[in-house]
Amino acid sequence: MRYVSILIVLFFTLVSTVHGQARPMVSANNAILMEQSSGRVLYEKKAHEKQPIASITKIMTAIVAIESGKMDEIAKASRRAIYTEGSSIYLEQGEKMSIEDLLYGLMLRSGNDAAVAIGEHIGGSMEGFVYLMNEKARWLGMTNTHFENPHGLHSDNHYSTAYDMALLMKYAMDNKTFRKISSTESYKSEKRTYAWRNKNKLLTRYYDFCTGGKTGYTKIAGRTLVSSAKKENMDLIAVTFNAPDDWNDHISLYEWGYSNYDLEKLDETGLQLYKLNKEIVEGAIKDAIFYPLDEQEKNNIKKKSFLLRKENRNHQIAIGKTIYYLNEKEIGEVPIHASIRTADEETFTKTLSVVIKQIMRVE
Image 1 (spheres, rainbow, N blue to C red):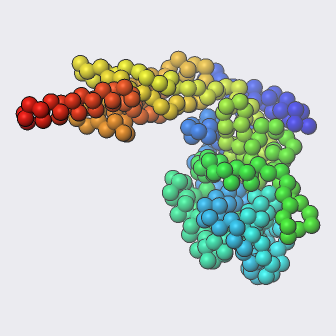
Image 2: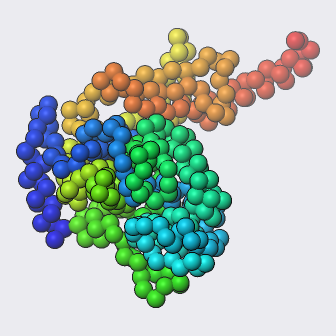
Image 3: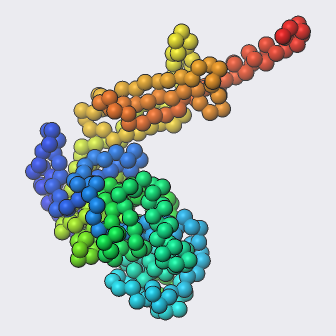
């Protein structure tokens, strides 16, 4: 079944071409494909347009709850929680369940009752928790997002954009606990006699490379979907709003992304020589930087290195930086560290100078 879906979307992927590069056709009103490590947008369709988002809201609910450090605490389901309409894990009033179990019910079964129970326990009230959600959104730079609840049921002032939700997923996927929950196909709570099966069919049925995500639906928002995938060394994030054929939309986006882009190392790590005026300095790049590039772009990367003046260098931190450009646009930078040999030589020279001055009693 997975391979049939891939063949179908590969056909449609070839239909539309822009600047000589095939682009996927999607049913979604709004869509985006982002490379996770760099945040580079590979494809977008009205990605900054504010729209209702339904249950993909729960990605924010989950990450705020995880970062609260209260995973082992026990929440008590309120009347408000159990009477929340829509998807449910069927909590009973007064039922006690760990935040961890509630998070699995939230992400796998999209439990609106779980969302309220989590929010009330961690935020002190649902309103208090929503405040934390909006604060997190601002901190992440989700400038076109506003939350009014932790579950995503429709409200005129509850909205986001495909771009903002990709930013959120990018951040969330850096969290080990979130990745584990999001990638879980089935989970059984000790409070239940049956297991919860993940509603994300991209993960459980349709796409072998899917690593997680969250589904959503309301009559007003339509079908919404956030997902992640990994093939070889590249992690991608896809978001679609109001997409009647969202499973195939995401497969199409991923296959297009993996066919057209490779995650390339922009520079080699290790020792390099740098020039500042007439001074030649030996420096080291410790951390490699990677960026998704298509075939044409691989030959268009340029870099410029900048060194601090000698008197301003701190060998414990960095002596400068290298900035990388694609078509004259800055795409990343890495610090240049002093090599151990350079640092030791300068330390030795300074120490020797002090000793000689003391012997000669010269200042």
